[in-house]
Image (cartoon, rainbow, N blue to C red; front, side):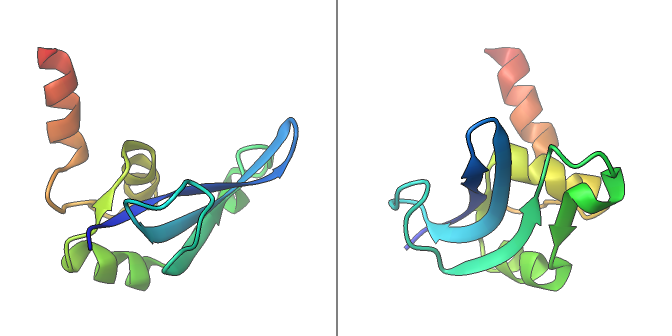
Amino acid sequence: MAVKLRMKRMGSTHRPFYRIISVDERRKRDGRVIEELGTYNPVDLNVDRQLELKLDRVAYWLSVGAQPSQTVAHLIKRKGMNPASGTTVESQDALKAQA
């Protein structure tokens, strides 16, 4: 089972709210999750409250080989943690530049 760290959309129309989750990569976007790792509310005007992460659990999932989506990797980096797993944000950006 390959685990991904990605976002699950919540909220209503025009008021997005996301949960950052660990999930089997074969599951649907809003399907069953393994663990909830935090929340992201892009509508909140207070930048400090927009992103909440359980950094210890994120570090655990990255250590056991979970792959973050590009958006989640940027959010992890924004919290000051290196999303170093199989691929890093820098290597993903380099791959995009080559294409």
